[in-house]
Length: 126
Image (cartoon, rainbow, N blue to C red; front, side, top):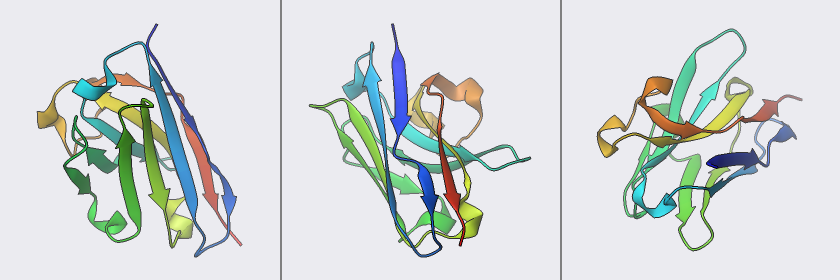
Protein backbone atom coordinates (compact mmCIF):
# COMPACT_ATOMS: atom_id res chain seq x y z
CA UNK A 1 0.00 0.00 0.00
CA UNK A 2 1.34 3.39 -0.99
CA UNK A 3 1.51 5.92 1.83
CA UNK A 4 2.71 9.49 2.16
CA UNK A 5 2.38 10.73 5.73
CA UNK A 6 3.14 14.35 6.52
CA UNK A 7 4.07 15.64 9.95
CA UNK A 8 5.61 18.64 11.64
CA UNK A 9 2.92 21.24 11.15
CA UNK A 10 1.65 23.46 13.92
CA UNK A 11 1.14 26.99 15.15
CA UNK A 12 4.11 29.34 14.86
CA UNK A 13 4.59 33.08 15.24
CA UNK A 14 5.55 35.24 12.27
CA UNK A 15 9.27 35.03 11.69
CA UNK A 16 9.43 31.57 13.17
CA UNK A 17 10.44 28.23 11.67
CA UNK A 18 8.96 24.81 11.14
CA UNK A 19 10.29 21.63 9.60
CA UNK A 20 7.79 19.46 7.77
CA UNK A 21 8.49 15.83 7.06
CA UNK A 22 6.85 13.32 4.74
CA UNK A 23 7.35 9.58 5.25
CA UNK A 24 6.96 7.56 2.06
CA UNK A 25 6.27 3.86 1.72
CA UNK A 26 4.89 1.37 -0.76
CA UNK A 27 6.65 2.71 -3.85
CA UNK A 28 10.20 3.25 -5.09
CA UNK A 29 10.81 6.66 -3.53
CA UNK A 30 14.19 7.15 -5.20
CA UNK A 31 12.68 7.13 -8.68
CA UNK A 32 10.09 9.86 -8.13
CA UNK A 33 10.30 13.60 -8.39
CA UNK A 34 8.75 14.80 -5.15
CA UNK A 35 6.98 18.03 -4.42
CA UNK A 36 5.33 20.08 -1.72
CA UNK A 37 2.12 21.94 -2.45
CA UNK A 38 -0.15 23.86 -0.12
CA UNK A 39 -3.74 24.98 0.09
CA UNK A 40 -4.81 28.05 2.02
CA UNK A 41 -8.40 28.32 3.27
CA UNK A 42 -10.75 29.02 0.39
CA UNK A 43 -8.01 28.77 -2.24
CA UNK A 44 -6.70 26.17 -4.67
CA UNK A 45 -3.53 24.17 -4.47
CA UNK A 46 -0.33 26.20 -4.76
CA UNK A 47 3.01 24.77 -5.77
CA UNK A 48 5.73 25.29 -3.12
CA UNK A 49 8.86 23.33 -4.00
CA UNK A 50 10.11 20.28 -5.89
CA UNK A 51 13.13 18.01 -5.68
CA UNK A 52 14.38 15.65 -8.35
CA UNK A 53 14.33 11.88 -7.99
CA UNK A 54 17.96 11.71 -6.91
CA UNK A 55 17.76 14.88 -4.85
CA UNK A 56 20.30 16.79 -6.88
CA UNK A 57 17.95 19.42 -8.28
CA UNK A 58 15.61 21.67 -6.33
CA UNK A 59 13.03 24.20 -7.41
CA UNK A 60 11.09 26.83 -5.45
CA UNK A 61 8.19 29.14 -6.04
CA UNK A 62 9.40 32.73 -6.05
CA UNK A 63 7.76 33.62 -2.73
CA UNK A 64 9.54 30.69 -1.01
CA UNK A 65 13.04 31.23 -2.38
CA UNK A 66 15.51 31.96 0.36
CA UNK A 67 13.08 30.96 3.09
CA UNK A 68 12.24 27.31 2.37
CA UNK A 69 14.60 24.39 1.78
CA UNK A 70 13.49 21.05 0.39
CA UNK A 71 15.49 17.88 0.98
CA UNK A 72 15.16 14.19 0.35
CA UNK A 73 16.67 11.29 2.28
CA UNK A 74 16.49 8.29 -0.02
CA UNK A 75 17.88 5.91 2.60
CA UNK A 76 15.08 6.85 5.01
CA UNK A 77 12.37 7.44 2.37
CA UNK A 78 11.64 10.87 3.75
CA UNK A 79 10.98 14.25 2.19
CA UNK A 80 11.49 17.36 4.31
CA UNK A 81 10.68 21.03 4.00
CA UNK A 82 12.52 23.45 6.25
CA UNK A 83 10.52 26.67 6.48
CA UNK A 84 12.11 29.80 7.93
CA UNK A 85 10.96 33.40 8.26
CA UNK A 86 7.36 32.28 8.15
CA UNK A 87 4.66 34.80 7.30
CA UNK A 88 0.92 34.79 8.00
CA UNK A 89 0.35 34.19 4.28
CA UNK A 90 2.17 30.85 4.62
CA UNK A 91 -0.79 29.57 6.61
CA UNK A 92 -2.13 26.54 4.75
CA UNK A 93 -2.45 22.80 4.66
CA UNK A 94 0.81 21.43 3.28
CA UNK A 95 0.86 18.26 1.20
CA UNK A 96 3.70 16.17 -0.14
CA UNK A 97 3.21 14.45 -3.45
CA UNK A 98 5.01 12.28 -5.96
CA UNK A 99 4.76 13.60 -9.49
CA UNK A 100 3.76 11.31 -12.34
CA UNK A 101 6.74 12.65 -14.28
CA UNK A 102 9.73 14.91 -13.80
CA UNK A 103 8.16 17.14 -16.44
CA UNK A 104 5.47 18.13 -13.90
CA UNK A 105 7.79 20.42 -11.93
CA UNK A 106 5.96 23.58 -10.91
CA UNK A 107 2.47 22.18 -11.31
CA UNK A 108 0.00 22.01 -8.44
CA UNK A 109 -2.72 20.16 -10.34
CA UNK A 110 -3.40 16.94 -8.42
CA UNK A 111 -3.97 15.15 -11.72
CA UNK A 112 -0.19 15.31 -12.12
CA UNK A 113 0.36 13.46 -8.85
CA UNK A 114 0.97 9.74 -8.75
CA UNK A 115 0.50 9.83 -4.97
CA UNK A 116 -0.14 12.42 -2.29
CA UNK A 117 -0.69 12.53 1.43
CA UNK A 118 -3.35 13.81 3.79
CA UNK A 119 -1.50 16.99 4.66
CA UNK A 120 -0.26 18.78 7.75
CA UNK A 121 -1.61 22.14 8.90
CA UNK A 122 0.69 25.13 9.26
CA UNK A 123 -0.67 28.23 10.95
CA UNK A 124 1.40 31.37 11.21
CA UNK A 125 -0.12 33.81 13.65
CA UNK A 126 0.78 35.97 16.59
